[in-house]
Length: 100
Image (cartoon, rainbow, N blue to C red; front, side, top):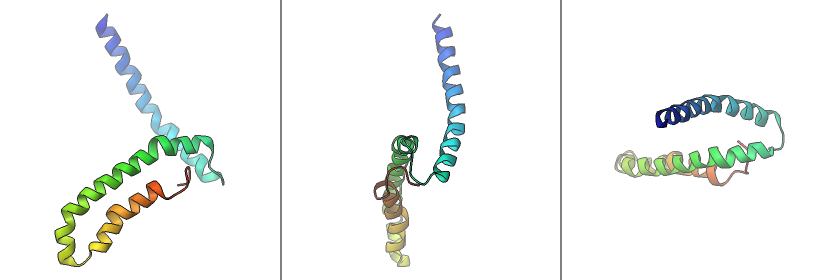
């Protein structure tokens, strides 16, 4: 009985994760056509895009710190900081909700 429940859960997860890309492509097309973001667009931005942006900002900050000695030697610390930390942070925190 437990094995049947485990198999059912695995099948549901596989189907769910298989359907997600199709839904996100449809939402992206909707955003491109609309002038004002819809509620679904804002929800997608809040639930999916913003957390990815936060993660990108954190990972960029780590890579910035790791690359800092090399950036300092190459005299491009500002450029590295802008591309690795500032740009993802602006995308995550400065733009209006639902606008990509």
